[in-house]
Every structure is written in structure tokens, then in C-alpha cells.
Length: 57
Image (cartoon, rainbow, N blue to C red; front, side):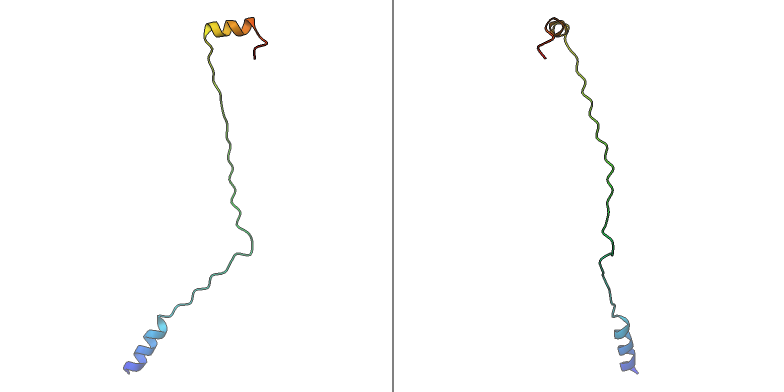
């Protein structure tokens, strides 16, 4: 009787795991929106200098 119990317990602990690759490729959508804002301030003298010489820039 002990042999039957040991055989049943040993047979019940075996597990089978199947791993397979997916049929379709994995798609990762990354919707990234990058915005950049440049803020500049001019000194009064620099502003007047640019107005006087617009060809500098």
C-alpha cells in the first residue's frame, strides 16, 4: 500500500511547461510628443543695437 501511495505522489508532482513563441511580432506603440520652447529677453541696449543694425543677425 505504501508503494502505491509513493508512486501516486511522485507522479502527481511532475509538471510539464510548454513555452512557445507568438505567431505575430510584438508591437510597442510609443506616442511621444516633444516640444521645445525658447524664451529670450534682451537688454534695452541690446534691443536698440539690433534695431540700429538689423543685418547683424
